[in-house]
Image (cartoon, rainbow, N blue to C red; front, side, top):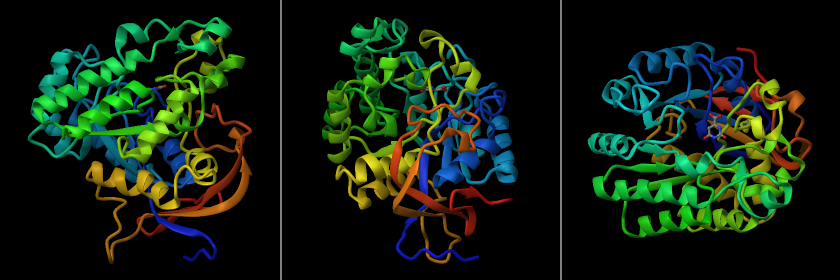
Length: 388
Ligand code: DOR
């Protein structure tokens, strides 16, 4: 197979370490098939799926099941993130060793996004014998429950109760302290607050084994997007004010934050078609990530092309010890081909994801992934996912 890549950028395959595929159990929101088609369409060759499925990914059987289905029906590589707790209440530690044996690459919570300190400590101590990170979703439960968006000038203006950003700071402080105490590698998911970034910076300076990610939307959107009460802007952590966005960019540049992720969190469009306060958190991101990063970060001179490739391919592969996505001589390649100057408009009707809803609807972009190669085979060419 050939592709004329003259004038394009041939990059190592892009990796998204924070994708919510909803299979098993919630296929009306997304399946392995539709989620991996969306990844292929967006130029992403490897995704890692979060464990808040139904049942949660908390046993080796579920890990193997996802791996098998992904091998059969998936368009891109699927890495699996196991749950640290066996039950949804987070009382009992899951059999993490068994899941690692079946190929889990990291652990996170099962969807409640709050670990008890006890569970976290037990999991962290256990993980010190393995080379896989524990992911912290970094939202403090009680304070987070009080609001629907970032607490600040915009929430006051539109009369929607807000979540104080200190909720995130508190959660991140606890989790980096546990990393320092136990020596377990803790990866902070979707950092969105200036306070959390400052805490991670200090922890890294002390040599704590901490890594961190930021989403595309927390780098490029503010809470002003919520002014029209669009449920497409509801997400956890919430879109924050410009000072926080600036802090995320600075943290990415100084190495405090290691990678960029999508937090692709699809919900069935009708679930989002409700009043602002009733809508579930999250929206899809696999098909917009590369375009938005190239438009708002690369073309606006926030990141160089080398930094984009590092934050979306090399660093995630390194942090999570991934085999796929690392280019080795002679191995079948995972490749993302970029057209840096291609102009296009985000149109969710053209998305492969079931999730459709995006805060970037109608955005005019410059730059796009124009071909995706997984294990030496084209899975997307010029925006169209290739037949399997
Ligand atoms: O907005 C979000 N939705 N943030 C998360 O961390 C989880 C996700 C989901 O599962 O829908």
